[in-house]
Image 1: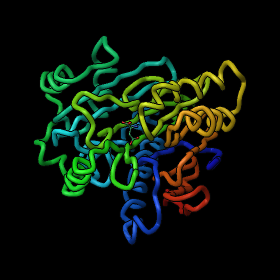
Image 2 (image 1 turned 180 degrees about the vertical axis):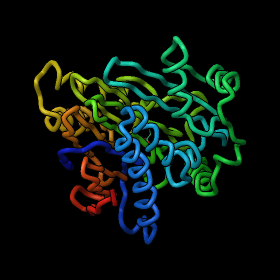
Image 3 (image 1 turned 120 degrees about the vertical axis):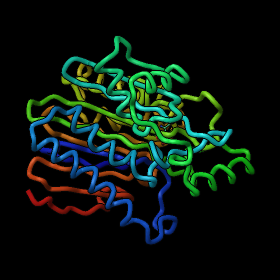
Length: 320
Ligand code: ASP
């Protein structure tokens, strides 16, 4: 079991979980910490400005989607046919408002499209060519495939095509991004964005855009964003299950997260983790694998980022 607990948190983010070893990462850890810090900083500014928890999670996820280091937006992993199919979802805890998109091929920021669907359409989820068409119809920013496809992702696909495997990315690092936040009114929100799995079949959809599986938020319980082998998170309805255990089973955030990630999911063979946050600012990270890119910022601007095992991160403070 691998867990961390925080109090007075306003924003928690992740950049994917998996088997992350220091030797695999080499001297590149600072690059990842920098992007995590930038995402926390943008989200914290939104919190300080009194913006909604949706604004806070979208601010943080936008930074992560724009970085080629993570498996979302720019830097998404590639499908078997060599393109990107991006998924994203977000949810508001105050009224269970939700928006989701899957298999986007051109939107620069999938999380913005999910938000647009939530705010401006009568739907919760749009998929495939219909989702791409929605982007066009609403003049949301797009990019050519060359923007999304990095040399590193192409090399991962080549390697996995050769070995005939489907994985969540090189070295079994997952790379999906997500955020959970609570605003000054005590409303929580969750957001998750991903390119999915390297070498995935055309049309495969993971847990990230599925409300209740990879993304969930309810002011009665908590906000959750997951990362890991999506099929298992769908089968366990991971995020909603954590929330239900709190709301209806009176479990603590810690117990609910551990039960789902370290028992239910692990027994099935599912690997990964979650970040979760309650309206009172109690936050947890839970993984059943060796690492997760992650970060937390508290009300006072104390900021924590980590990659490897729990407790391995460092605290700093934003100037505020
Ligand atoms: N959960 C994502 C998926 O299965 C992958 C990840 O977390 O990196 O699509």
